[in-house]
Length: 493
Length: 95
Image (cartoon, rainbow over all chains, first blue to last red; front, top):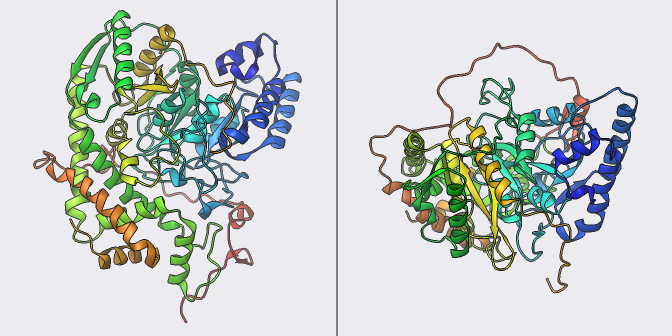
């Protein structure tokens, strides 16, 4: 048995039966990181000594009977835009290269309360802007299924780390698909919760009306377990919803008989790769065999959503990133004449090209003369998208689409063409625009052996239904398994 | 909409960003590409719709205005580029 092959609920079983210790688990993961991280490059910060020390302490407390937590000693990886007290939170940006948060994000308080062990902070596109993790200031992360391919993004480090067994599970964040798309590319399970289900306090803001933190895991049960831990109202985030706590694990019934699934045909149109389509068709057949009522439907919003998304997200980003001015966040330009010059030079040196591009676009659509044509129109499109989803959900319990039009693409193939990179988000952004929950689960491999992902979209705060639908599929189909044997990188790449 | 060279420099200035002379054309092309695509929103059937500003805007959220003291000044100040006597030090604003 290889410890790092196991899901978290399997680890919990083995711990309960005393077949393994928490120290065994952390050591096994650190060993894996040692062996594979040079190829994958999933981390920005690895907490080797800290994790080992913490695992020893937790083991001691368990031996002494001081703690009995269900998750005590379970390791986790955290996307590097979630604030961790005392550990750098860089957002994979030069601007925050040395930033150490003075407090923990609310999700981290919850993780720490469970005595979980943080193995490190995971790589991402700078400030979560991108779909390939190539826009990290530090290094590119590679896809564990093929090291010449991108892992997706922006939570590419989180998805790659889970797929390569460098962490048993991870937290990511999703503004337009940044949990689901990399999970699809890396053959793992990624859930974007309903807007407001998980506190955003301590998540470095990209687009505040769209951002959500969510789990990236090896299977659906782990996704439900981690969501149980991080969900809940938080006074520190006024957009977090105050509602009764749901046990998402109990929602996993392995039964979809009578479940009404709508398949919006527009999500299978132009630009969708044939192999992706074929794989989704098989998944649809499987749902029918399992007793679900699957029906094609129309939801003509994908293109409008994508345009509205880039307008709204960039507008919010241009405002949110205004705080990085060279005064409070560690990076400051060396030479400047006056304060305005200090701001300008700091920001020009500290931000990478994609971040600057989005700040410029966001400033443009908010500026006088263009506000009505772009920003206000986009906000109206947002209403349209919400209405169309509402109509669809009068008829269906779940909507089924591809997570991404393609499988993972080659490193370098899109990084010079921003618009092409944006088009890859076409299946995921509408879910954020409407604030709905969406999950990506693996549903097949293409001819080259790259994972294909299926997205299930649910009603607001109805994570239970999509988790159960995903779980039931997974029980029949199986997981893709993770990449224990990472192929060696070819030297010329 | 066609973006001019002057406009992009003006926008960059509003955003406190400097664009190098040799980068202006690239940023201009990128912005034009994206705006041409974003123009789709102007064909969307939204004439009679209101705007939406957030995913859950049914109600305002109020709380008591209570002072909570954050005592860990040291970890706040560790991110200051320059500090003096427990304060963030900034360059002279008025010359």
